Image: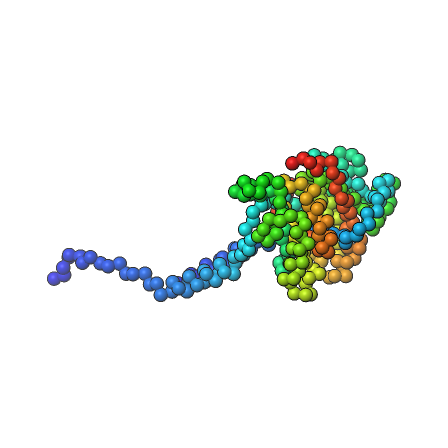
Length: 168
Length: 156
């Protein structure tokens, strides 16, 4: 009987997965009373991503599908001065993301997810090229920091506009 | 001469001597594996799906903020507008500063600066309230946050 009990115990131990929450980590900028510096919209090093209250996505003032966003962002960050309308290099490239108070949280997360995904993809590619491993598999902190310095995550979030504040 | 009349035979009883052991093992198993639900969640929680999240293994650093419309059974008294829930109570955006302080108070000193606010937000909530929450968190100097999402299975 004891054998069966142990068998059951081991079976449960192996098969049970204890739920760990997963989340997209964000670090907020510290609070200041001064208004944030205005975003230079004509700057080649800024990618403007806007979401309106109807969950429509605009990238550089063009309506875009969310599925295209990741590739557009990657192109923009990794341009390295080739295209005169896109960034000089990944260190100065900034993604400026702005929603509306009426945007749904679902859409907001989809967009944020793609922006983060673009950075994660680039980091993975760089890590594979240099060390033959994916970025998340690296364990050496100097290597991790090297990749992080190559592609620093620079997503700046502006206060959402208020056009859709009254809806819903 | 042997008798052919069969005596009614009694079925042997099951030996229950080890039953307590089994029960104890099961008990221990469930004690270890079960995660206690500390709070009764009063707001709707259908989380959005994403792909780029990280596992949050340092549970002691997490403090949860739930946002969503009140559940059906609470709607009569609370209405349908999205609300915040901090611990067990429904709260307003202004209560966050006090909440953050209280949560930091519960932690050992060396962890206080590392506090991570975990936002569990219903899909249908608007970004406005989240922006207000983020502003309050910045004022309260709790700058690390994480949007809890479910894993999306890729179609391709």
